[in-house]
Length: 89
Image 1 (cartoon, one colour):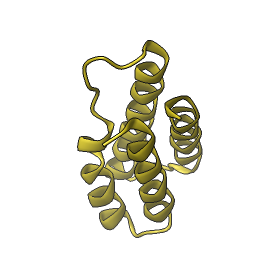
Image 2: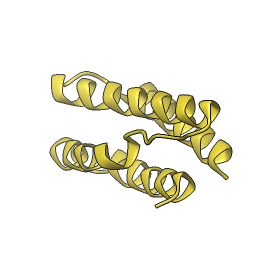
Image 3: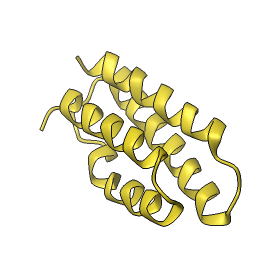
Image 4: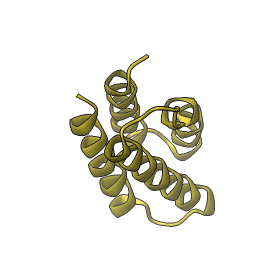
């Protein structure tokens, strides 16, 4: 599966998870791990964007797990994933 396809699937899942109850959102975020893992041979910019998206998604998950506000973190994760999508094209 291409990086562009993975990034698109991650974006769709993020947008869906944002409106879900916390436990379902956490489950959705956990399912994204396989899509945001790096692969050998990626261009450096794409790998960096993917890593940034992964870290931002992890921050959302940590906040949700701890019962902390995550509104700004959702925006960060979506923005990082958008950057990944643009570079992966």
